[in-house]
Image (cartoon, rainbow, N blue to C red; front, side):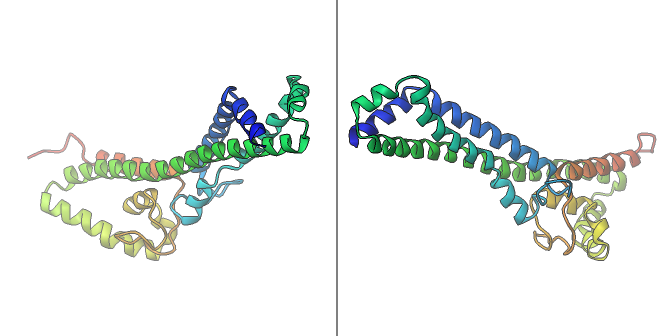
Length: 240
């Protein structure tokens, strides 16, 4: 059995099979993971819940279904390759006990499948966490842009700071809790949920009952708000 195992692992090490199939698993996982993240929360077709929810994050991290199928195909190729390459005769002449040969192939295939699975799981996790982290980066950038417009609009620095803090801590909580449909379009709430805060969670807290916008929609809303505020601070206005 030891000799048969060594032979099977040698075959795997000296061919590009595992690397190729692992690359395919990673590629498919990345494609599905990105598509799911981008369409999360849209409610269309097979879209997963928003990444601002625990369910959405879990579903996106579990986008490894095609990698599982690739692992099964890897086992098929490991076994059937002997017959395609006409090496089965040599293999069974060297090890007449076919049960041992098949067991060795199964063990080798399991090890190769585990490598493929680890790579796919790491890819799915990286994409999910990457989108969640990117939400914080993008949300911060767009809120800063909106803040620059607010500062130019209000002009009195202390007054502008108080207005922005009051808006985020008071106004959005009241409006969001009262009008949950409108709440998801408010700038701080949209940015916080883009960053991964959940319904009723976060600090400052997101109003309960507000559902996160899909990733692209949240970015579009924040961009529109930043542009709108900037438009109000027209250059024709007296700066003194």
